[in-house]
Image 1 (tube, helix red, strand yellow):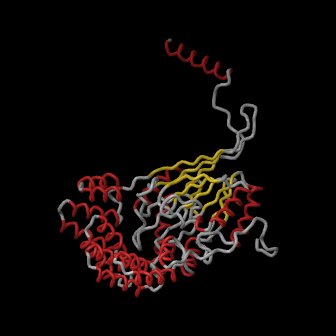
Image 2: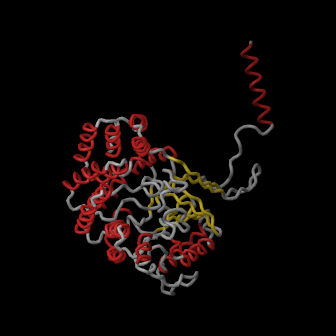
Length: 483
């Protein structure tokens, strides 16, 4: 009888709840929510494998089940890489992000596109330099801040293209967003190296976006997270996808952004009308490789090994993982075993020699680093980045002569690779050789006339960044401009 009384009571309660409006809550009337993810700056070091943290990030994002993903640029390291290495880097990126389980759209970063060859490779491997993506009633305007002939700004032609696209999007979209690589308002090491390099052009872009109702901009370039609010625009700088973090600045973390678009919802008998709501949340992702390396450096190699054991699946093979475990073993006194393990990694993956060498330099083991760079050069004798890494090893060892010879060797490998000139400039300045420093500065800006490093070199030469033409104005497109 007790079970009968319980059943009767349950039925009476259920009936009362139904009479009082209980049951499932009323559903709003309108478009379904759109969930998307934004991240960027996931590039490896040189020709190395895509950073392990990108795989960890992909695994996290896959659980979010987003409708679409956007990448804010710097997919590969780019500078100094051969065409084959650039293409291989893009393909490895695509293999890694296949774990996301959702379509991904990218914009070019400065490490992706910097000359005619790199631009062609990017378009062949990753798609258009700029485009409009429409999904879930929202429009995403993917912009090219690396346009040849208009670096660090939006060219007139792209501005007027964007104006036409915004006009269409404003009529058909419940929300609109802009995605680009260089930030409009950098907060860290790239101040003066974003769209702020040419404020009039940056402000013209801002005004155009505000005019048509774009309130959120996603950018990268700085390896950190920051939220900047300026004159009707909120910019989220998201560059924590795996490239070396800018640790000296606030917000330096590996992360992605999870964005949800809800509404607008029409009024019903049960619910009032609800406006559009956009929620942006930063989701941090731990990088066991980075954590282990820091513990090995700080004198706790056993903890470094434990971090790798707990943080990485036992059956997951990645050269960065294997290298950092080997270095932790070296740090706890197992030098020979650790060296052999590093050698085994480089035998299987000589393209990771630059990553291994840089890890060794980070630990303060310049002689060991030089050995790793030499090992890489045995398999890749025309790799300028390895010679540049070797030069850094020699600088730390106090052998300036060999360091400068290594930089010269890098330049012989690739005459279009500008970084060795910049390093020579810095060296000659420190050595109080101003004439040689100016010569190196001149050689650098001849190859790379724009950007943060160019500004430093130009300052030494008593010059400034090349001026830009007047900023475009809304509605000023030529009558015969393309659609």
